[in-house]
Image (cartoon, rainbow, N blue to C red):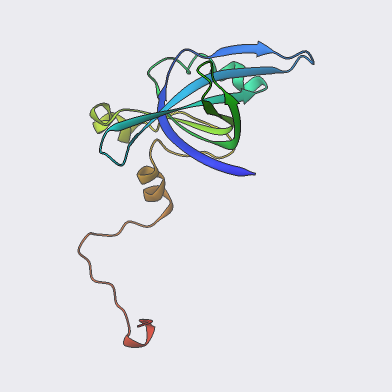
Length: 153
């Protein structure tokens, strides 16, 4: 099983379907931007699925343009496109989702209210907020007291 963490923008509003067995599934696309070797932006699309009642509840938040961090299980498939070229289909079964705000909107609001998180664990809007909540505060520039014996080199 491959666990993947993705951060990107939702490409279109989510849709909820019922399987033949009656289980609901919420599908949405996530666009993840990265820089290619030549310095150009490359966008990779992932098809994401949230199963059960959780998907039904999340549908209202999964709208086009929303920033989200998704943690889930990756499944890759290969198929031949209409142009005859092989293509890769990337599907993610979502275990956790965290809605984040763009940097320009974070400011004081982000510190006052954590972003909404749905999944197995309660987390804050960014990993930096989570680390601050889990670790004691440390001042920048403070010297750590190391013994010469504790340094491995």
